[in-house]
Image 1 (cartoon, protein in one colour):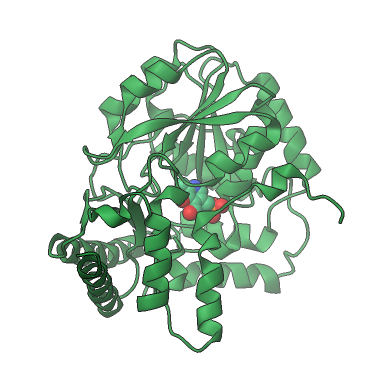
Image 2 (cartoon, rainbow, N blue to C red):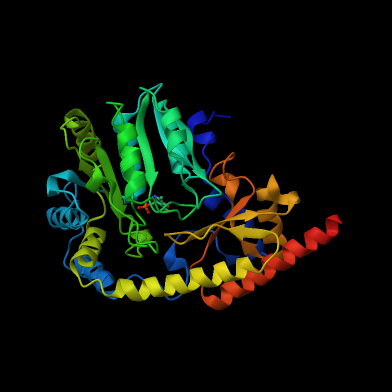
Length: 403
Ligand SMILES: Cc1ncc(COP(=O)(O)O)c(C=O)c1O
């Protein structure tokens, strides 16, 4: 047997790992209600806006099928820079680098900033790649706590206690996946005050859910930073409802010009991987330039689905949740003792017995996510009602079986 690298054999991505048993059940003829994946297109009523699809298609038909410049199409870089500037900081098109989604942007940032022995400080629980990728560069991820009893707000004391000269990247996912917490201006300013004490520390501001904010608190980290360098991450996947296009970006905010060498490294890495998809960039451009009135209709739909889930959870014994401020996730606590340390077993049991698929909280952090499940609440209201009926039945059955 030819050995696999240890780097590949240890990678996990809980959100898709649970799909394997679900696919098996589907192949046996069962219908599964899938509330596991943060892909709005997987659910009815939230299609990619037609004017964006049209621009993508026109791009194909007009022959825009070649490589684009490595940092992105100039018009798209300009439109992204204008959009970031509208969020409160001075972003020029040269600060914007278009990637194959935020996922590739993260890999580029990690490759350009991490070395053996360095650290990434990321929220726990968090979106899995923040744990999976840094180790590929010899670095490690250290979790800082989100407060599970305070709406999953960031624990600034915990961050302060974990900072040292090896922390290169301090991550804020805002709104957060999986908890939906939104950090506001006051918390972000305090986070920047902490980061400022460490001259090698840069902030990764993953703002991919920024327009899915129900709290009214969301604010760009770059807009508040006067001295700490910030990588602002965003793209077409969530707010523009086109995750399969694989387009995102990193925008560099470098108020004290300390990222000259890092920027050069990022540009080298980007050139070495050629470019992001050209026609998909045209689709995103249409989204940024076009009328955004449609976003309010989409937001109302998402909000109605969120409210239904909150109401249903409030009336079911064995599950409770901190109401999320943004994104489209609920990170719910399993309150029956049997599940407190076995959320994965809950997920597998629910899948096999009730054909409802959610993700185990420990997949987002073995320590800080245990005893929770993540529910994507984008399905239509009927489907959500059915899913909660089944969750309720499952909880009751196992509670009485234990007695
Ligand atoms: C916090 C966060 N960042 C990034 C991504 C992936 O972004 P992209 O589709 O642009 O690669 C996700 C997807 O779920 C996410 O939740």
